Amino acid sequence: MTSEFEHVPVSVAGKTAVVVGGTSGIGRAIARAFAADGADVVASSRTEERVEETTAELRSLEASSVAVTCDVTDRDSLVALYEATADEFGGVDVLVNSPSAIARRGLLDVTEEEWASVLGVQLTGVVRTCQTFARRMDGGSLVNISSLSSVVTMADLVAYSTAKGAIDAFTRNAAKELAPEIRVNAIRPGYVATPQTADAYAEGSYRYERIRERAPMGRMADPGEIAGAAIYLASDAASYTTGEILTVDGGFAASAFE
Image (tube, rainbow, N blue to C red; front, side, top):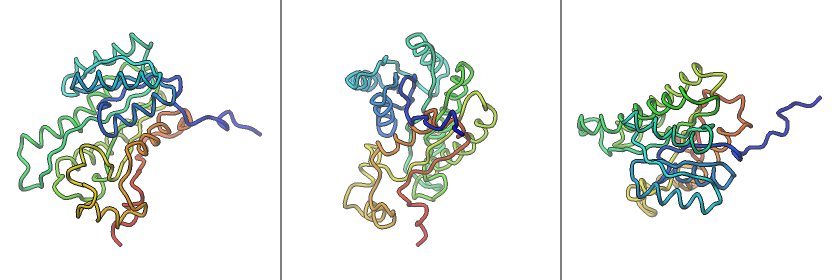
């Protein structure tokens, strides 16, 4: 007996994907990986120069792309992003949420303004984006970028960690509400070598060496290794996967308390 799902490839070829926060770090790696795999990709963020640069990069990978800026704190901006993508490609199959905002402060030091800024982008912005797109999508997949900090305490990241913990809960709730038409999952990366982490976790620093010692893989992740998880979750091979928080941390959480 054979199954119709027996030979479903792990691929996003032929799909149209929007990556919010897709012009730097993990988001950019995901946009590049989708493009290389044969998807039409729109990588968006607030910075026009970065959007133009990333769009050109995606086109160099022979992907179709359009340059559209967006601001996750502005619903009209998100509607415009969806409509520009749908006008060009006929719809949206995949939304990846990877907006960036961080304040490296602990509970006693974080200001109300910093707290509101981080949660406004990392939590409310993601909810707003999912809501805007899900109302208009005809099926498909939403992939939110969470963080290991949602389950493992990290120093001086109280606002960021709180937002990511809420993203985990939101992802599960959204998956239940939007099924079976739209699947909703999240990726929980561990320590990833990106421009955002370069200063705090420079190679040879105390923090870097602690990660290297405690993670079974012995290193930080490359952003492209997170992109592989995104391709799986967005692909038809994951057609029965929803409400999942997929941890990609090199085994860090499994050995954090040795």
